[in-house]
Image (cartoon, rainbow over all chains, first blue to last red; front, side, top):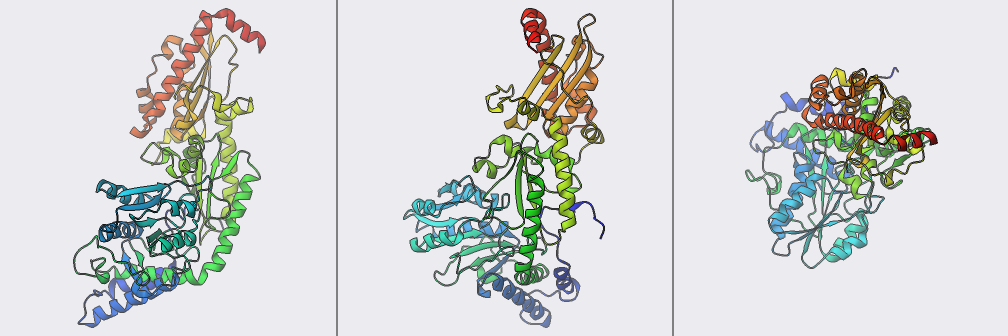
Length: 406
Length: 139
């Protein structure tokens, strides 16, 4: 098969809808269009049946009960509902929340908003490998702590946190544990009981489902978690999320979960092998390349690398037929480079030089071969253009230079 | 964000990439920016001492496509100008020529800074000819 350009290698940002998911959704646009809350006619019953089927598919993927799944508009809403919902429900028990510096903005900004309302938040640091120590969580818990929220897999560097151990600590201390599992559920095995989680956020579009739909796992037993809703209205989703259900999207989410469950073992092996091929193909050819984040405790499809002496955005431009993302400030509206890389202690210079490759279901070996060639060519060309590379070749220690811009 | 055709052209075919002998008394070198900020430009000019005309200009840049294009354009504009005329190049002219969006204006400012730094370095060498000669002798 001929190589088709451009190549998509940004699967942490979003994924294409799997054609099988799309087919499952198709009848729910025009034929089966009922409101799942319409209890008195067939249109409603059919929609409700589809929703309940999807609820079971989602629950099966994470070994939960269907009653523990709340459908939302996506993981950002799930994170907001989990964090603010717990804070509002349990504020009489305490006012302390624990999270980590490398969390997604949906978590960090929810916590910051609660801080403004009087809650106290501890932002745990991470090691140079991006991992959080369960002991740090344990020692941060006080008798005022009502929630610990730690993501399972990081969206930038793909590192997988020791969720089971952190969950165990929380259980022992009687603190509710939420995990933003947006990058994890559907990508790596996730069992709510083995992992000791009480709340878990997930999203359809990260796992080959449609955008605009996600879910929140809410534990019903040991302990029973209750949330104050963010959306008030018709009392849908056991009162936790009012609003007419997005039946079509939910059907897609369910199908995506079913496919993920069935295909995970073979898909993970294949994607991991592609990732390793890419990593070796680049590192064997180019010096001064660093992998950001833990080398093995990471998502199979994630490769986050810094190419010293080359700026990230210019590197993206040099391989513009491959869609990846960069931790460089220049690619975002803010002028700060990635806060996640900075939290790992990666120097700002190397943060500016980082590229995130996200491999997934539809990438091929051919695409990886092509990418290796393009990356190596672009890095070599840009290093010839780089005054930093030239200085290093002359034996100058860049850290000792008095930079005019500082 | 889409780049203008001119930025893409300078990125793909950068003009005057390279280095001049920084110890040569007729060469002025400007090194501006910092790696932590994501931009470093090195811009060099070689001046004919008789005519004060810039006969050659070279650059190397660590930075985004707009930074590379700004410095590449600057070297094109510098060649054939007198030192005084070089100082007349303003960042706003670079912004206009390359159609830089607001978030990339700092790239043009850096290019202007690099020109000034290179001229200053050359002028310093002229006022301290002895030191420059010594340095040249060691090259």
